[in-house]
Image (cartoon, rainbow, N blue to C red; front, side, top):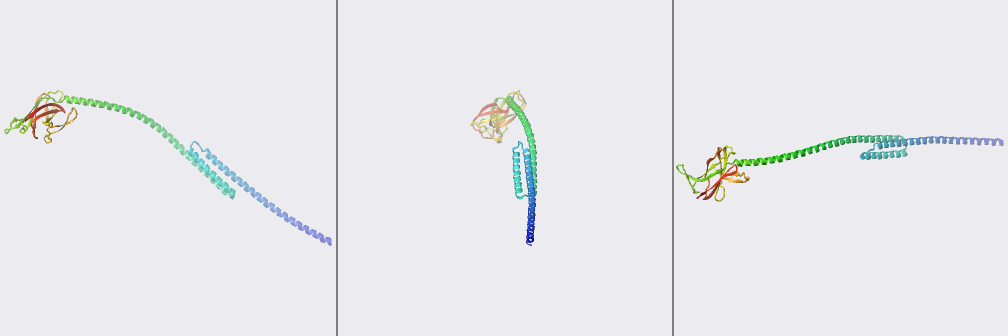
Length: 326
């Protein structure tokens, strides 16, 4: 009987031990299965992390290399490319940091695609700038060519202008010389054509009641002066009317002058000086020697003393004489 109880106890204890062993085995098996799941999960995450990081680095390096290949001699474009590379680097580091903390691979991949799009945009901008620079360079080269052509044309034009200017100056100088010669010849011809006078005589007259003229030398009483002279023959002068200016110079040295009576101002051809004249007369000249008398009616008071008379033709002194009044 005691042996049977002992046996039963042993059996019961064995059963309990078996049950505990089975429970423990089941627990460890479950733990082992969960651990395997975690390992698989971690492996998957590590694989995704590695894959994502590698793609990020690969796309970043490709973008940087593509930008670097666009560098050239244009320093401004190179600076822009370096700025774009810096922006991509900042964006890559930001994606890598977010990937490590959040492990949101989908979001990371989306950001990587944005980085690629940004890089492509940068590359397109650089290519556009290079195209614009190429157009500007070609335009600048054309401008330089045109500038060179214009400079050559300007140089030629300037040279031609200098030559023309010199020729013009030479012609102007020649013209001036001709004008001076012409003026000299004109002066000579004009002077040579002036009508010279001789045998000049001046007498005072009064007009009597019967209309006859009577000589008078009293300054207060005389009414007119008669100025007579011989016009000498001049073969150079043309026949026709000749203009004579008479200057009657009083005892005080002043020219008798009365604008109302026909006085004015004339120019001496010998020195271009201005002087007053008493009166001017148009005289018919037939090309031959002839005696002429000109009448000057007394319009202003006269004083006693010596008077001088000068006659001018073509601005030159043709003759002179003197007379006295009491």
